[in-house]
Length: 596
Image (cartoon, rainbow, N blue to C red; front, side):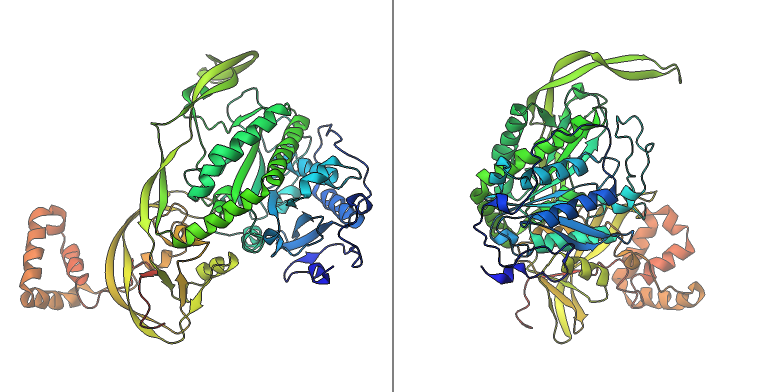
C-alpha cells in the first residue's frame, strides 16, 4: 500500500488521526467499522445542535478507518469548517479524489433554520459506515464528502422563532451568519470567510456532483420534497443534456419508488401553482450556480416547511441516497462527461452571460396540490389565500424549464488585470484559475470597455449595491502595463468562471458586486473661471468640435441654458480629462505574441 495516500494535503487538518498505516485496503469493510445501526428511521422533532453534531462525526472518524473528519478552512465566527470524507480506498487527499472516483459533495446548514439535511446527512454517514451495511456497495465508485454545517455562526444562533409557520424542529439556527450574511448569495463576492474557504475547496476537490440541502416555503402542496437541479440550458452543453435526459428522470423515479415522490421546486409564475411553475435560474451567487462554473452538476433539495420535521429529514436522506446510488451505477459516464465538459469549455469562444425564460416551451405536469381558496381576512379585511389541506387536488399545470441566452459575449484569448485589483486576483487564485505575471512593463494594444451607463439597486443587498443593465462602449487603446500585472489565458476548464466574473455585463460579475466602483468616480475637475479661456481656444482651433458644440446647443435646451454643462462638455474633450474615469480595468487581448 502506498503510504503517501495518508499524507495530509496542505491546508487540510485531520481532526482525529486514527488511521492504521499498516492496514490493507483489501480487507473487508466490516472489519474497519464497528457501528451496528443500519437505516434506523429518524424520529422526533429535534435537530442536533452544532457541538453535538461535530462530536458525532468525530466518533465516526475514530471508529472507522475509511472515514476522516478534516478541516478545510475558517468561518466568520472563528470556528473551523469541516468536511467528512468516506472512502474505502483510504485516500483522503482532497486534491486527488476526483482522479479516482466520482466525488459527491453534500453541503448542509447554509441556512441553519432549514436543518433537515444536517440530520439526514449524519444518518447517511452512519448507515454507510455501519457494520454489515448493504449501502457500502454504493461506495465502490463514489467518494462521499459531507460538510456537516456550513453556516456555523447561524447554527450557534439557535432559537425557535425566526421562521414563521415552520413545522419544527423545536430549535434551529438563524439564516444570517456571524456577519448577518446570507451565505447562499456569497459564492462569487466572498464577503465571508466561509465562502472563501468553499471557493478554495471547490478548486481543490473538483467534485462531480453537489447537493445543497434546504427547506422551502411558498405555496402549499402534497409533496414533502422538491428539487432544483443545475439549469440544463445554462450548464455546459454535454452536462445539460445529461441532466435533463438522464440524471433528473432517474432521481425522480427512484424517489417515487421509495415512497417520497417529488416535484420540481415550486417557483410559481403567479400567486398559486395553477399559474405554472418555472425552473429556478441559479446564477453564480447561489451554491449550485457557482458549482456549475466548475462543471459540477448541482442539486438543491427543498423540503416543505409545513411538513413534519421527521418527514423532511427522511425525504432528504432518501434523496441523498438516490443520487448516491445513481452516481455509483453511472460513475464512468459521469466522470467522462465532466472531463468532456472541461475540455469543451477550454476551446469555447461564446458564452451566455444573461438569460431569459423561454415561455414558448413547457411540459404538462401532473401536480398534487390542494384547493386554493380565497376568503376575507379577519385581520385586514382584504382577500386572503388559503390552501385547504382537506381538499387535495390534482392539477394539470405548465412547467417551464427552458431558458434562452439574453446576452452573449465572445471571450478574448486573454484578459489582463492590473495587480492593483488584488481582491479580484485573490478570488481567481482561490478557484485555481491559472495566471501568469508580466515579467517586464509593456505598452499593449487592448480592447477596452468604457462604462457608458448602469443602474444600481436603491437599497443594499447582502452588503452591496448591485449594478445591472450595464451599457458598454468598446475601444482599442494602448495601455501601459507594469511588471507583475496578471494575464489570464482563456483556455482553461474554468473558462466559465473566468468569463462570468470578469465580463462586467454578467449578472454576478465582479463589477456587478462593486469590486470596481472606484473607477466610477471622477477624480479631477476644473475651475470654470480658469477653464473658460482654454475652452475658447479649443473651439477656435477645432472647427469640427465647434460645429458639434453648436449643434448640441440647438437640440438640447437644458445644455444650452447651462454655462457649467457647456464647459464640462468641452472639458471632457480636452487633454486634461482623465482617461481612467469609467474605464473598466480588465482588458481584453487576442494577441500577446509580441511579448511572449
